[in-house]
Image 1 (cartoon, rainbow, N blue to C red):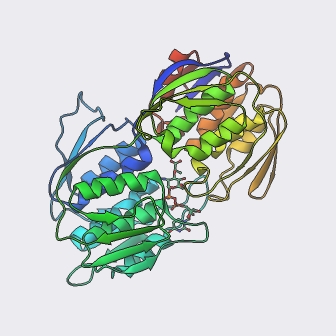
Image 2: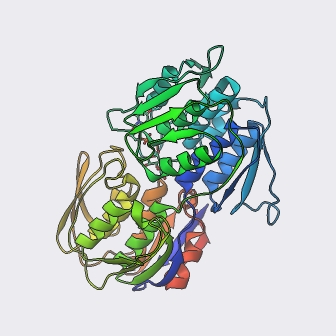
Length: 437
Ligand code: EPZ
């Protein structure tokens, strides 16, 4: 297994281009199952999770029609075509490693009339239920049973039918649940209204792709989405939106090292909660006025120790839970006490004890962590546990005094493409090493 060896080395300076979004691409790849025509996605990063999704779709009968640029290469262009009648069984050994595989459920049951998808397990950030996904599809007429650990969804004779449904749960809306139901509704007979839909930009991007395939989706990005079912969907070429979480991670890299980074292809318009918090902490974030809010060029600079922050994660447009660990790393070196509350995934604090190994003064009380800022963290061997916790540890290592070894960076490779090769040109002393046993 690989690790990252990082030497804290002062300010990062330079330019980075934000990659396409993992969390937008995954449901878009699943949407290939809604049509027999070829679908081309552009701007895809080379990520373990996207490669897993291609493997899952391959098992579901989707043929890759693009020519990889080199044997085994992945991205930035991917063309897939779903063979009618493929095997509608998404097996546990893939869904286990990439729980986003659940988002093939809606497209499969809508297009094939039957879907068999392994129940995704939990993960490091806690229990990951799918009850809202199932409730939403049942509202469209699907009959859902659990058979040997698999979710089996069957459409009624005549196919799914539109319905008005409430999709909110105790922790608010569900992003992939909204994607699943929205996709299924595109081929249901009649009109579907999804109340308490997720408002994340990735849902907006998916709706754009579906409408380009001939769907009739309105209201994506708002809590109420309306879908008029159509007979069939056609193929499409779609450019995946930039990754707002990767962009936010790079912004914190500039802030925590007191450097200056120019970000290209930055979805600044989707990051207002995070940029507001950065500005409150003393970080300068400026962008070119004329850019499209989803693909801006922006400058992030920080000359001083950050001011303490109060962060509570919420569904979009609130502060994104996927940036909580990164901002906690920044809070560790703030000039005062910060309060960070996690409202989406109660257990998303695996990075807390690891940051503590670097000298951070963090005290957890339930869903809240109080960070007593210190002048500087100290490098130490730390263990990555999940994708965004790993990112937080890398950021801490960039700013720490001395050497940090971040172990099990396979977690990081799920959502950041060769992160070490992108940070090194900005002055980061970071390299990938074979993990010593
Ligand atoms: C998506 O996961 C993202 N993943 C996550 O990013 C992100 O953290 C999450 O949305 C929240 O923004 C992808 O898009 C691939 P949810 P998703 O359903 O859709 C509860 C990353 O780091 N819930 O919006 O699976 C759930 O437990 C990943 O890139 C139910 O109760 O998350 C949570 O508390 C991690 N029942 C809340 O809702 C359900 O049926 C939000 O979860 C579904 C969810």
